[in-house]
Length: 382
Image (tube, rainbow, N blue to C red; front, side, top):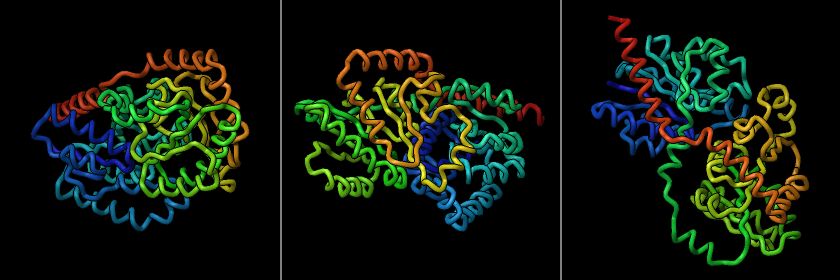
């Protein structure tokens, strides 16, 4: 058996590698190739290009990258013809993957979307592309399956693979002990993994931190840097706040979440990790002023935070903005820090939501479904 797996972001590389590991457990002789990152390589993928190391988000960034992605696309289609896979498994990353799905479908190769794009939130019209080129969607969120079923898309609910990764997560005890040995209540700041998100959101996150520092004695801040260059850029911004008790740590997101009493986070899949840890969180996402009107047009989901989408209400505050929202965000975090009953009430509600969704095994269930679907296709063909 040969499976082509394509992942185009670090989170996709993580989920894709866990899927690949489960696939290899089920069928040790399976051959895996495609696009991804270092984790998929470690899981045994013969990688055509490290696509996960080059995430693209935003209209203009995507336009500029078209010539480059055309080259990746040609690599994939050539591979389909020289090393025809039994199935193509796509991990999130819409844009490029729409074209990859169509190319595979035109060649009669079954296409399965593992960690589907959130088209129910931003681009509902794309469901017709899903119906045309994708054989089956493995849904990660409870409401997602109902949404696809109502639109005639073949799908199964498997749960979210993020919880697979969290079940294997090991925290650094030395880092935790060192931080806990120091005085001060900790606020976690999570500025996202994409560079443009960091640049857009960090300035107002730091202003929020300054406002909190002025009101809550003894509070200190830990910033989770995803890439070294991003961490260095954040440290440059901190020169504007010489009195602020704040540190930037690279590759310490799980530990910082574990240590934080409250959190200010850029919207993303990290929301599931925050839900799993039940950390009261204010979620933010700043959009360019010129693009903000378009966001209002294309946004179909009621919330931007996965915590709120799963809760089906605004359990934790969120801000989708085109300007500085620090004056609105800081008081909410301050309230949690000063009113323990309020913070605990939020934790209790998050715990209830967590109990309904936080179960590991999504990757194993996806592999089981994949193999069953492929077997059914073989029987029909025979």
